[in-house]
Length: 209
Picture 1 (tube, rainbow, N blue to C red):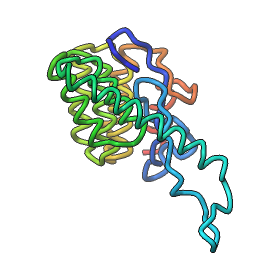
Picture 2: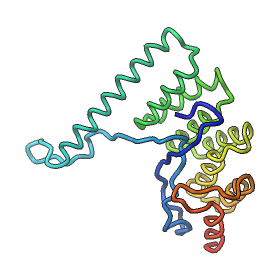
Picture 3: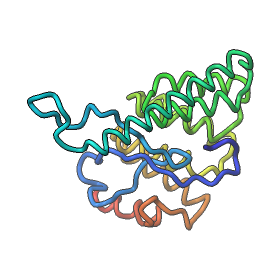
């Protein structure tokens, strides 16, 4: 998980397609700060007329195992925090577990508590922004990314994420392009998760306007 300003960020969360097909052919993703995998419960599996799982039984069992694992880890951390409520790292890790298990509101709460104790962790701030975005609060997400950028102007994850939210959630193409242009100004070699340069994405979007 992202714990400090120097951590390299390599993970992505799937995005929605931008209106107008500006990035229709791209799989650029939404950087979260580390590799996150969401394990859905078995509610998505098909059930036969007799109430038995008709397909994906192995997958459902695996998902159930992961869910149980998350629940156990969450309980362990919560018990730890009852005795150590000012443990910022434990609160951040709890937020990561809620993040991974799609418990957006709980993740937001844990991250905010962690940041109340150690407010300058850009990775945790960025993860908080991601959770606000997933919780359909894009403007709050932008606020968090801006905080991370203010603390560390070279923090590329927050800059890229800001562009994604502006483009995909707020339909602000000009704002999204500007955010990414500021990223390229910091690092001309900045790359999107699909391996394409951010500068190339910007030029593609400008042609689509």
